[in-house]
Length: 84
Image (cartoon, rainbow, N blue to C red; front, top):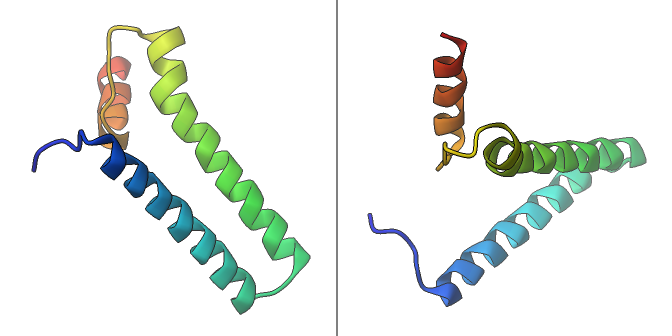
């Protein structure tokens, strides 16, 4: 499969991710409507976003500028290689 290069399709893909996340959030709150579930879900989303930033920005810019990650599995492989 070729890389996605058209900016319109890239934006469309991003919007689909956003809408899917909002839909999942709403459906979880409909299933278990409570402030506690909403706050924990929001915290979980925020933590995963920060982890994603850590993997794809912090490691590349502050730890090892020579390695470029293309996915989470590349990051795991990088961690395994760096431990040896």
